[in-house]
Length: 137
Image (cartoon, rainbow, N blue to C red):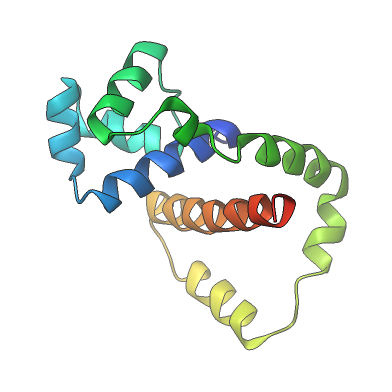
């Protein structure tokens, strides 16, 4: 299975964050858009790209501009290029902390591939926001 494009995953993560902020269920959002719950989930995980017309409709429902969903996307793209060039070094530089070990052990206990993807998406979204904040502070 092909990995989600990092920009698609980023936009989907921003969609999920905003939907949760507004306390809108996937079901309610799917109904408002005239699509299925699975489609919303695929967008949020970045496994499907959001088409232009759906993107515009989503922003209306969520009360944001399209730029909200793409916030930090440039930093994500730059980080992706840099990360791809240095991936082995980044993995070896994981800090040997209690938190790192807890994270690895908890992740290893997840059997459901969707749950693993959701955990990765959450962590990447938080990390991307921190990267953006470092670059813009």
